[in-house]
Image (cartoon, rainbow, N blue to C red; front, side):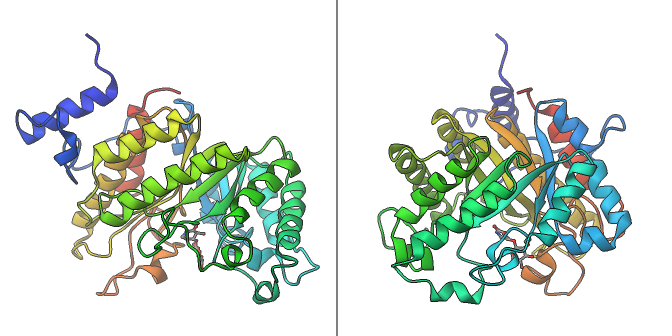
Length: 381
Ligand code: XIL
């Protein structure tokens, strides 16, 4: 009998734990598939995008205008490795909409051009979010909300029609930790207050009408771990996807934000893998968006830190890439020189964080090897 990669992983995993465990993965949390060698060896010279492409997967990253325009060494590393560029902030309302009647595409257009010039796909993040909005949006009323939302989506999506791979149409609509609603929707956001849950449906329909060829994605975070919060969030996401389909909204994929923490041992391979299967079973593709691995709670020692971060990348990607509906892996940045975690999730010892494939010195770290190894081991799409 030929074992699927997943079965092999499970057996390897069970063997690692001792006999009898392989059949009950639900009890298992936070252990490696198997201990990778300490130096995470990688064969050959191919870049990350080439290794991914060999398996029918897209590899890319978030990049921002400031870093990519000012730092040519970084821009080179970025273009060498990425088959897709996601503007980190430039397509959010705060960047695009200086006033209710103006659209400013200057920095996002530069990024689209940079992507094109280097043969990268271009991806949109995000048309609706509760954050990074301009002040004037607060003046929107129940009377004009739908019109304001549709005008934004229609203009922005048409602007990039024919040059965009996919759009995160709605980002982070769920607040599983505190929303008392059955559907766990984040009900204090402005769009929810003005349009109720319908804002999500309206947004997808407006995006689909503006560009029938773009892949339309619902993107959300805190879906990775076996915690009460994440378990609720995964269930809520499945319900939201079903609801969107029942409303005939054009939705093609789920974006799973991968903001991981190397010290968090609550990753449950089976639960996460089953979740991806359920999403795939709904006929949706999956993109692993916003992948990075915080080293905030790891010891200071560089080797220990880099290994633990690399191990987290490899374990997570090995489980996720086993699902053939996963078509893209996107890290939230390429180098520790430019990562939001420097401010958002700093270390208490103030040491620079080491969370992305390249160090601040633009040298590859073990995290790069770990991602490469996961692509090399992944089944073909
Ligand atoms: C972050 C950017 O990286 C920061 O530069 C910005 O200040 C705030 O937003 N989830 C998302 C992303 O969907 O848009 C966020 O990006 C990170 C969390």
